[in-house]
Image: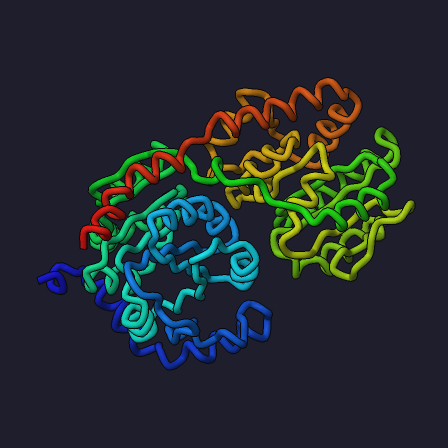
Length: 429
């Protein structure tokens, strides 16, 4: 019966991914060459486990990448209090590295298999999860269909659906509805997310806030932080965080404008994709601003004006250096990057106009004057100049950003209250 109700688009997807299954090896090899796969754990991407399944009830939690798994760490700890084993999956090398460093006791990590029927079936057959918890917008068809067919309850937490994703899914509304109907409960971040999911056919949807407000800010290696602070000699520091292609030029042009007004300024550029560090260094050199790259194990010296932080897992370090942060993905039409971490670490936030992915957060930060919008290199330079020229204004903006994100917490408790019946049911089994 369930198969008859599956729309033809999903049946075609399942059929095509079944046929294409043997080709996934080639795709993964290409990704390995680019450093996007771990060669020692490539079997996990085919659904072949590298660890045994623990005895007793198992809760499976999946987050796509670094941001998602960091947001669920407090939840993992709370689930562990029930005594259940937890399997955490993710899809990127960086997230796996962070998971291995910070996993709570009793939590195992595996890479999520590629979304083919055979790989996903191997995964489900081995792990036999008793409850599956997906995060944000991880709507992989084979994952959802096969997990549901195995009788495993599915819950989506911290759900969000951007305008762009909603527009794509709306073109396949029957497919979206068929997938969402397999999810027992959707706990989403904002009212807009709830509305979009409901319009696509989701049944039980509740807006309960963003788990990232309840996550601890990223840490920093004390020795690395001390070394950078010594190297910077108390010079003013401005950070452009998680920048995307097209934004670095505006940041560099802003720095050129700021040279006279903010003597000694060091601009740190931390690209969203660290492999772009060389290209950013070349762009800086073209503008007459030789750059130093952290990936080459350099520290800034007295002559350094542009410092490219093209490394992984060091945002906590960088945010602690910079009282003013520009959040990337917002001067280009990407939708913005999450400002919660720098706000929690006491940074004043600047951002471009394109922040639809985090519209509610930026809207509240702007309303409380913990953040401000810039539109181009000139307005970015003017805003940075004003903040460094008025320490009282900068401090007020930093405090407002911190207070705003702390006030917006509470999603962790609401999430636990919502999934508690599922956890209790596992015990009754």
